Image (cartoon, rainbow, N blue to C red; front, side, top):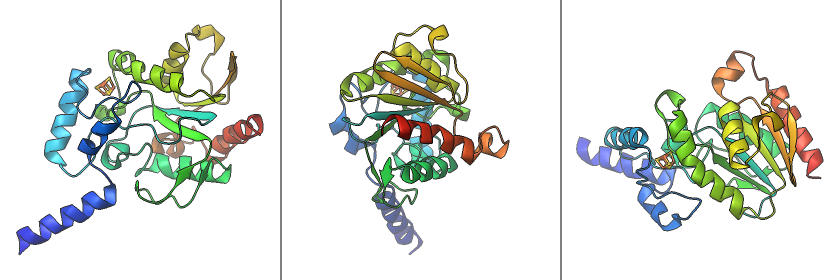
Length: 237
Ligand code: SF4
């Protein structure tokens, strides 16, 4: 009885979280690594350990969310262990998603309910979300070599977004990797919350990352975050 209930519970949990990593093999492309990407050995080992420990979590490189023809790209840091790494959708399932998706809905970049699960029906409008690093890193801290290695997928994401006009970079890691992907010098776009820079046809917007840590410490308030997206909305009006 106990075993049957546990199996049923896990099946329900899998459905609730959406497709597992195997289902994403089909979307392997220049911009999307396969579910078993081996390029960062430390992150692969961590992925394997999480698969053992949490077999019904997503536990794979998290693909970008939103249409490739969007004008806006939001670049985060990396999947959170119990957020995107669990659910398979960027910023879905942890506090950062509450603030990000609530703000996107408010400024017309998303529509529908955000219910912290990938099958909640939320749709991004003219907006796409990805991460500088596709795999969850231990303690939310990717190593420089991992950031550099995964930039190949960020490069491909940028290349395939033919209508791209604006990028919001959440935090310094995202900022630095995006600036490198765009082949800018660091002095052309120094990081600061609220900073903007022009890179050819692209407008770059900086924000502190919308993590729980940053909001709990007051480094980033919801209003500060909203102010960034208000300017993005004005720019893309
Ligand atoms: S972080 Fe990127 S490059 Fe490294 S293993 Fe994951 S998908 Fe591959």
